[in-house]
Image 1 (spheres, rainbow, N blue to C red):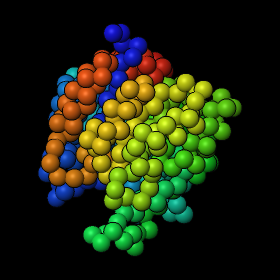
Image 2: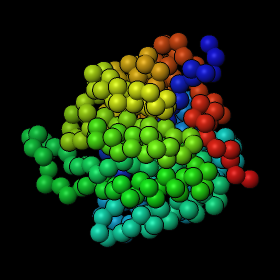
Image 3: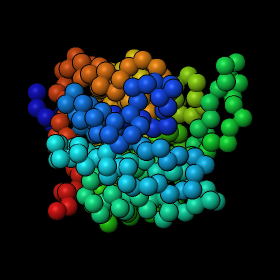
Image 4: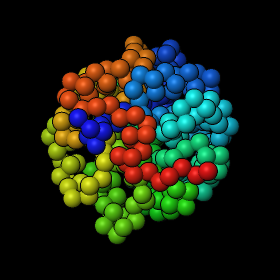
Length: 297
């Protein structure tokens, strides 16, 4: 085995998951630091985290200070760690310039080598206890103009985009950029499937992944799988993805359920990767596999 086929583990530490749902979820900067370090030691290569600024219904601006406070100690111990934040969805209340303001601060402080770039607008509502769609107005809005802005942002700051795909149409948007050579260096496609209690995304099945991979055929883009409202290791999607040459994202943001810690989830992914005969990528391996631009001095 060589690191050419190493499998990357991304862990999404928290998202909007509250401690009332899972007391293990890290919410404060100190908790993010401790959890990120533990996940890196367990085998994660990429860390994605949120702060308590909302992704829906906020001001459109996220404070960079909690990210800096939580990430700087991680990078002091693991300088090669790959970290990237979230950003609020769009809408009439904000602009992409405002939504990305914290990313500019984080880039200027050299604490990230990746950035989030989500394709398209998604219904993020769910189902109630009776299985009826909730009366939610939670739309995660991302326009084509936002994508233009964020891809240019990544090129300007030397960042690899984590390209979020929740619906098949979003792949079509991304492919329009790819065909015209407009995807920045270091791009990774993040295929987000939908669990049983959410209303977005294809189901986490081999047939659904095959559809996405058919659409991606010929691009050569690296990709990972995740399940919104689920665990790709438990539902079998991760194994199939690893066998097809992909990578894995999991974490308490996506799972949003009581029980495991993020470290537990990373360890389960490591065990699965080893069982399919692939090595686990270190952060340096991941940077090389993705072709991330060299870090700024």
